[in-house]
Image (tube, rainbow, N blue to C red; front, side, top):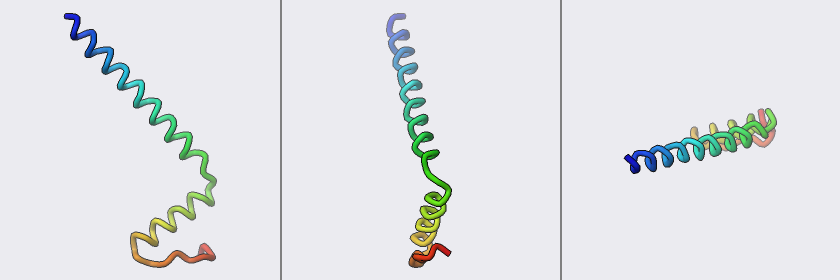
Length: 58
């Protein structure tokens, strides 16, 4: 029965580590201003469609 405890603790540690990673990513994502997000989306769209991004932003 002891190995079940070890597996359970390892699983619990994995869940906690995943939560930390998700929280950090969320904090990083929320740090962007709306203008930065808009610019990044336009750049990604231009890359996907093969267009050159417009410097004027519109």
